[in-house]
Length: 443
Ligand code: HSE
Image (tube, rainbow, N blue to C red; front, side, top):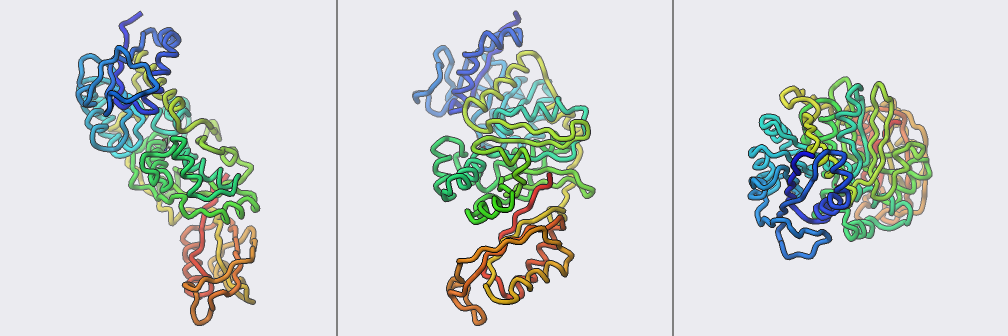
């Protein structure tokens, strides 16, 4: 058996502790699979005295992760600190500069600096591995980079944030408020330190930017993603979606179009008959449309200590075996520039919910504005019961006026036509509040 692989782990929180436990539990199997013993010899953490669910006896403690990254006592540096800058970035740069391979779960770091870090890893002939950075325990990085190497990918999309999927699932199943569901997700440890990263769609966007690069062989471009979070999704939308045969999911979508690559993160209507619609709770899922496999969906745990540790340990095992792939599938210098296709030109179906006065002709006016732009409606649904609020009253429309919630599902059309039709409807001064618009993802 070759020499042991000496691992240094920076950050011993939920994931870091799970990595040390998994390496210990699977020590024999990993040694026979890789031909080497894998030993955690050093760790760094902000509070060395803190009680942890991990046996760190025999590990050297470093207060400074950068000192750990530079230490001659480790061969491989595992970064589980998080954040795009500060100690995470500096320690990863230091480890690579010292000729050590790096394993990281840090999607924010990769989205911001992945290309420079990959170039540094290539220059130093070491590995930069990040399976755990996207979709937790689902081996999506390896699937895109190695498993589908013989395919041309047309679209990759998925549920990439467990917190949002947990919130939307609980709102639907138990009719609970958004705030209640978020508090529970935080209690269960799914959410980021700042949960606006989850619910605002930014965590999904970081992960999507990595998938886009792997799928299309282009440079990471998180700034070219249109992002909407789930804050505006209401129980009324979830119920209406259900009645119409849809479910609402926060999706990250990257799609090749004639104009370039469309990257978008937003609440999305998915038909209940699709595999992705059945993915509930903290689970993640990624669907890939590619020429040879056609459609492939991977489903699994997207957050949580053990699931994320599974991906980290898989990367460590590869490095122990001497596997060193180009981090983004092709050498960094060979990655193409991403040509951004504007979401305004997106073609698809739309869910539109409007609050309309219950008077003759009100709905006809809306239908006319749609028809003028050639927008064809697939279904129309109405619910009553609401009243116009005082702050929305004006001369033509008194406070307390009866309102109906009108829900439209359009056939495929262009986003700019929908926006134009809505602007015309707003200018008519009939509806009570801005419309809720949710894109429908095609099957
Ligand atoms: N906050 C993330 C999620 C954790 O909810 O999916 C995994 O990146």
